[in-house]
Every structure is written in C-alpha cells, then in structure tokens.
Image (cartoon, rainbow, N blue to C red; front, side):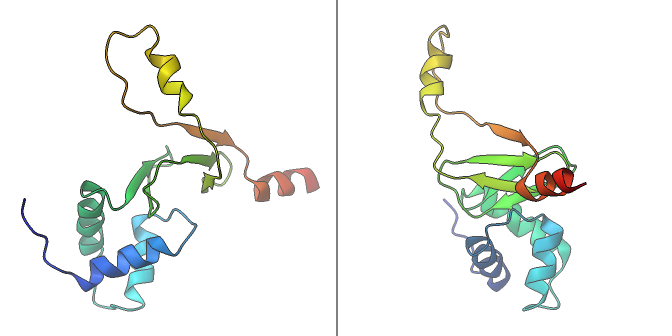
Length: 132
C-alpha cells in the first residue's frame, strides 16, 4: 500500500469536517479552507476529498440536489434530507441494524450493510411553513 504524502490542505479539510455538524459541499469546504490557505484551488479540494473518501476518512453523500455533501463522521449513522432547503442532517441514535437480517431472509446472497436516507421538512422549514 502506497503511503500518502502529508498535505496541510488535506488536514485542514479533515479538521473542518471533524468540527462541523453541517454536511458541506466541496464549494463550502473550499471557501472555508481558503480562509487559512488563500492560494488553495478548488481542484485541490476535490482531489483531496476524493482521496479522503477513498481512504474511508470522509463520507460522500449524494442526496439528489446535484451536489455531493461530505461528512467527517464515518461511523454508521443515518441522514435526513430536507426536501425544501436540501439541508443534510444526522439523525441521532437511530439503529436499523435489524434491517440487514430482514432483507437477507429471502435472499440467497450475503448482506453486509445498507444505506438509508430519510426525507421531509427540517425543523426550520417546518417552522417557516407553519408560520405562513
């Protein structure tokens, strides 16, 4: 296995993702990293994000809004996607591990995991709608 050369920009991306509850796009990460490294390019951000995803250090979430979102929390968890504002949020303390067993009951192969997204209105959009 080839060792990856240290990169300050990559570490800055990891640090930002580790300290945010948001699920930012590459463009948002680019703007944040530029605060520390003004000469960083968007291409560098994309290359490093792809490497971090490949190495399992970051999750890439494609949620249908045309942009990939990134998550520094790699332990298994579920996401909620607001169909109004496209915000991506973690769903706390939800365990659907039994779904693998249910799905495998009539399946001859081996189920090793699953991905699930929940959709609807986030608390902010729900409040705006009820106040209108």
